[in-house]
Image 1 (cartoon, rainbow over the protein chains, first blue to last red):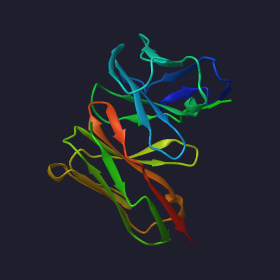
Image 2: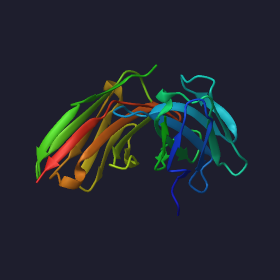
Image 3: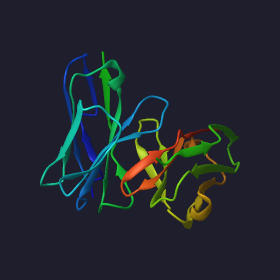
Image 4: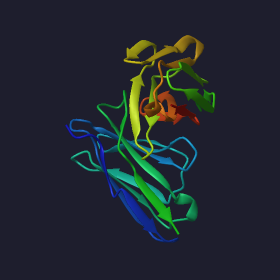
Amino acid sequence: DAGVTQSPTHLIKTRGQHVTLRCSPISGHKSVSWYQQVLGQGPQFIFQYYEKEERGRGNFPDRFSARQFPNYSSELNVNALLLGDSALYLCASSLGNTGELFFGEGSRLTVL
Amino acid sequence: GIQVEQSPPDLILQEGANSTLRCNFSDSVNNLQWFHQNPWGQLINLFYIPSGTKQNGRLSATTVATERYSLLYISSSQTTDSGVYFCASGGYNKLIFGAGTRLAVHP
């Protein structure tokens, strides 16, 4: 079975632009979470969605938004990109609202 | 909120040595996981261990939830064990990650 898949794997944007990152969970998993990892640090929680509803939000500005689709895939959107948004964005899925998380390979965003 | 502290921050070993990585968390938790982050950034699941002891080959982990710590043991280390090890703890699906232990295993 396929694991968590994310796209694109790498992308470069300029300040002020918008970006959309996509995530497909493991088949049968209904929860998707997003994390941001800047160089040299541990990942930080951004959002969690379960059954298409937002169930948790981390300490990120309103420029960050997400949604989950009926097939449980998810998108993370970031508006008005700043240099500090350069990071590895990780998506994780889990079977239910609780339990073990499984991470994708990430989308590496560079903002110039 | 929950705080997660990992020690040591850096560890250098000779191949074949054993090591213990520690994770302290500040509150009772529903979820505790250990990950190995490979050079390409992917987080590889090692253990899902909110409590108790588990073993998988040369790796084992113990979580003492009442005392709010978890230990990851690596025995007979190999160069392929190099990388960053993260402990993550929390409630439901919101994980709080520690800063990681950077492990280098030399031949």
